[in-house]
Length: 119
Length: 110
Image 1: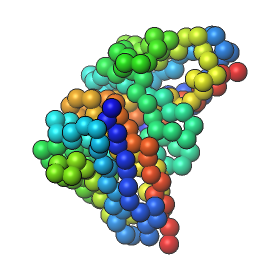
Image 2: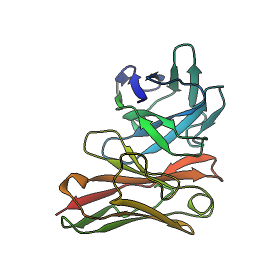
Image 3: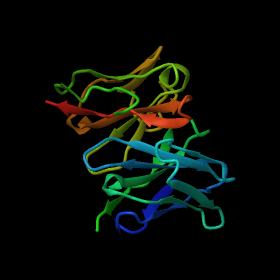
Image 4: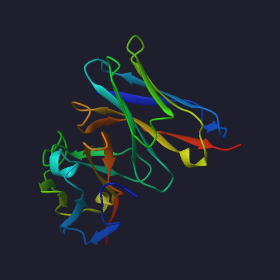
């Protein structure tokens, strides 16, 4: 059973960069697409982007100018960087695995980590 | 404003059946597979339905999915109090080249 765990600072100042890492255990990061999804408090899900183990990426066009997703196969981890954050970026950030290609469904999810943007 | 449209809430009595709709367009639901997720309070979303109508291992057959044109539907029969949760539809949008979700539907089992 694949397990995903998000880690990173829970508080980020406005205009700074949000950085999170997702550690994958009990399964290899290779041969799958991996994604970041966020959920503002009390609101719905928003797809941020995804990455293949080889490094191919897809990003939400509304966030593309500020987002970078990277993968480290040697550590079985992938990461999210979101720069120039504002209060609107406050959310629970989930990492998830895609069942197949980038347009498929998310079969394993991390529990999520709350990131608050505030000075 | 979500790309996919879901009703904000639905409700039904225990043992009854409920359906949740998800409406989109030809660039998303119309030409891509739909998935459904259940999010119990304080937990991560859980995959309920993928590829429009398939259930992952361990998901009871009380949950079903269907798609017609640019709309999809999640059905839940034999409602239980434990089914109270938020339900989200999701798919790929070929025009946006992005994953998209519905705004979510809160199910109340009265």
